Image 1: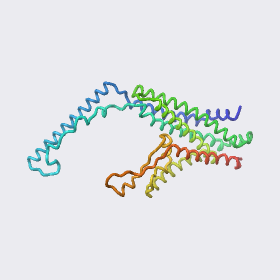
Image 2: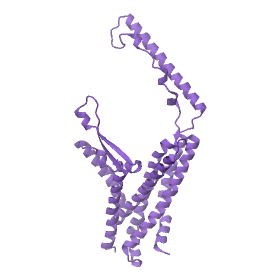
Image 3: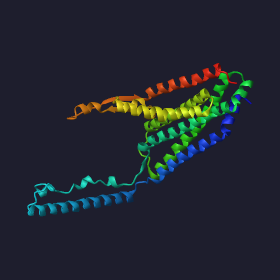
Image 4: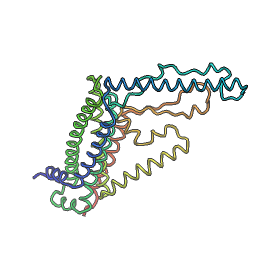
Amino acid sequence: MSLYRAELRRLVLRRLTRWATVLGLAVLATVAIGVFLSNQKIDDAARAKAEVAAEQYWQQQVRQTEEIRAECEQAAARGDQSDRFPPDCSQISPPPQDVYLAEQYLPATFDFRASFGGTLIALAAILALVGFVVGSSFVGAEWNTGGMMTMLLWRPKRVSVLLTKLAALLTGLLALAVTTTVLWFGSFWLIASTRGSTAGMTTGAWQSFALTSLRGVVLALVAAVLGFGLASLGRHTAMALGGAVGVVVVGQFGLGVLLSLTGAKFVEAWLLPTYVQAWMQKEVVLQDWQTCRVNPFGQCDPETLTLTWQHTSGLLVAGLVLILGGACWAIRRRDVS
């Protein structure tokens, strides 16, 4: 049996791989079920009910306005000069009926074209988390138990062994990500068909969703590589998980607080979630309102900074080169006994 097939089989049979996959799928299933239960299809009965609700609410506002106007007239007759009411009670009039549109009282419904793109971000986040955990434990456990040293006795080409393990990891994660993404599309198309609307889906809309899901799969693969590389550098799963906690909790939170206290411009541009959002949505426009504080009068256009998926791709490539390159250099240069 080749090393690649052996590593792929070991990846599939690991308990952590199975549990991480099950938990990730359970979270995604919970999201889909929640969306299904919180939406409903808009039919003639729902529209008629919304029209009745809008009419009732407008009538309620009319009655309250008439009561307030009557109180105003009584206060004027008593010579009350307080500021509770305007000088002319006729100014108190009910709002026009067309302000209360029936659409405002319709129940929540899932519009596939308008809402599905946001669910792809949640899908990518879960897949990336699963990829990072599985990737870090896949190689970290071998370093911790001594399996890597035993393997290198039979396969002395260190970098080749490490990259073969990585190839098996990426193959398994790619199969999981593609299968999950296809099921995600199908689930929400079913939700939209039964509890919402699938209208307006053009070729361009499908292409946009497909590219967004592709970027989500790439993000999951990159997360797996980063977890794999960090665990290999530290020879322990805790190195990757601890590094992730340090970057996200200490580094990002602390850096955000520090930059906010110093009044830095575009604080979000220094935070990793902003780049993840830019990667999934193609671009993020940041605004700096500090310039408007200098002149609070009149119209003010804040300074803007646009981050695109190209900026994120450069950051991802730099992270891959640094982490994976460092892991390959370390396993080649260090004593692995």
